[in-house]
Image (cartoon, rainbow, N blue to C red; front, top):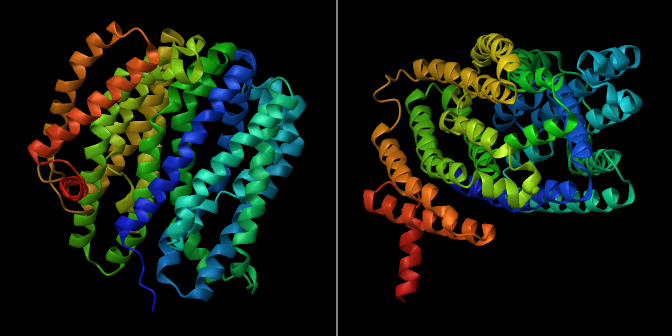
Amino acid sequence: MKKDPSLKSQASAIFIGSLAGTIFQLLIPVIIVRLISQEDFGIFRQFTLVAGTFTGLLGMGYSSSLYYFYPTTDWNGKQKIIQQTQLLLTFNLLLFIILFYFYGEEILTYLNFKNFIVVKWLVVLCVVLDLLSSGVVNIFTLEKNTLLNKIYPPIEKIVRFFIFLIIILLIPGFKGPIIALIVFVGLRLVYYLIHILPYLKKIYKVDLGLMKQQLVYSLPFGLALILNLISNKFDKFFINQYITPEEFAIYSIAFLSIPVLKQFYRSVNNVVVPEISIYMKNNKIIEATKLWQKTVDKISGITIPAVILFWILAKEIITILYTVEYVEAANYYRIFILMFFVSMFSQEIILRGSHKTKYILVSNIIGAIITIVVGFFIIQRMGLYGAIITALVGTVTPMIISLNFERRIMNLKIHNWVNWKKMGLNFFSSLLVGLPIFFFKDYIENIYLRTILVGVFFVSLIILIQMRLGIFIFPDKVNELLKKIRK
């Protein structure tokens, strides 16, 4: 019998694939901003905001249920859960198409996106193709397919890059990247359907019992996702009525985030949730707690220095990627990436693994209320700075509330929740290295040389300090490397 790969190898495979893909993902906006105007780029960003929001709303958290049900069932059960997930998504899409047919113009007008009325069916087509193909990465993780987890993300991003490049050169203006996006998600859907053919060979009747379980698990999580979307997108929809497409283009860059970290989080959390599910089903709360703490320990070890480094190099990163026309976004970017200091605690994986998704819903209800109240008060008064602060509040508030629920489930006190000493050492050592760099880096005039030297110096020094303090998260890898060098 083939042995399943370890959690470490699964997470590493997903991360390596995602990291390679991220490089090409970043190249897409780099190319777009150099081929179309700032106004057209702003309109394209508005399109992705609208289409992405509808996709998120219609997903209803159904894919998340796969991580709970798939690992603990036989092959027939796996076929059923995959088929019924696609069925539920299709049903939601049919309702969406009917609603948009009758009220599409009114919806777009209400959301202050009148530009898209003439291309409203492109919005619908993008949402349909994107949602139906959204499980393509989940399936590789569920199957524990380390090879595809490594090679699919970079291949996907390479294909996406060339699709965007070719179509933007052929079709000028904002319609170019919109059509490129639709072509890409269409090809992704074709590949996904081919991959899941084994799950569709025997078509099962709807298992009402299983569907009820899936809905009981998914709907609280799905409603939480909807509320989370409201929290995270409220600032963008609300500020849109006060700014031009050019200003929206600049503001949207603030959510560049730290791509490598996002991929790292996703690769680790997607692997950990099924294992926590198994522990919780067997009432092994202590083992689940230790796994969660180990996950946070690893993630925070990378997150803290990464956030400080990207905060220092914000202007350089924005300028290199998007040109000097977008450098104003650096101020908003520095504010938003502070959210990683909360998200590094891997919120919700205990709630998802223990089938307590109702608490995620509660967290997001409270978070949405707080975000909307804060947004109404400060966006009109502070403009884009009010919007980015609202976005930060909307992102971290439900995280903090969810984490408190999880702490109670794991029966942990604040003092023994995580390894605070290690986190503190990590934070202050990163700050100690980063502050002098921030004040003296501008003496290097060439922006590319400055970015490379600062990055190499900061990372090298942080690794040395972490090793000296005994808080480096990959000591085995370094020891292996040192042994090879000595040979």
